Image (tube, rainbow, N blue to C red; front, side, top):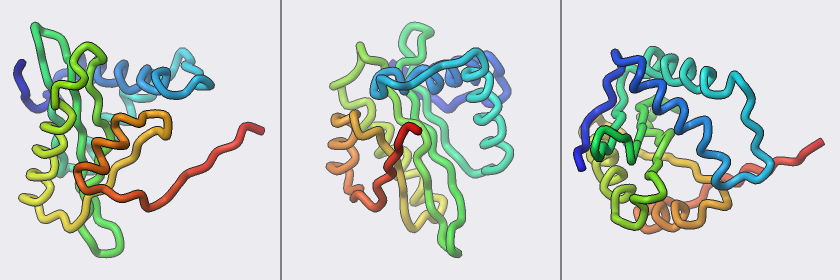
Amino acid sequence: MEFRPLNINDDNEIQLIAEIDAYLPFEYDPDYKLDTDSVYDCYLRLKKYFQDYPTYIFILGWDQNQIVAAHFVIMKEQKKKKIASVLITWVHKDYRGKGLAKKMKIDGEAWAKKHGAEEMSTHVHQNNQKMYEINLKAGYKPLFINLTKKI
């Protein structure tokens, strides 16, 4: 297992992350619908983050030329405060329970402190109980609850 930063100059690598990001909701949301543009939309959103938030860390866990873990944190300013925002924490199902998410969260938090963050924020799907528990153990506290309704 090797951890290294995402190569933002490698469109193939960004495409792999876009595919992971686009398909991830299937694990937790039975109503999630993937359309033909979903992966491309994720790809464009990632590229835009790299432009809009020049201070970020994107850690990838590799095993035998396959991405098995990813953690993406951006630095933003909100109400004159530097906030590190976790956008992606993902571990391949065959590698879960081995402490990879915890390791990446610790590395991301160390990076955020080094870059002057005063606070970190993250989000998690309500059906992803394991990640919710990881976040609670890491010291995160629920702040907002986002409710949705089909109409």
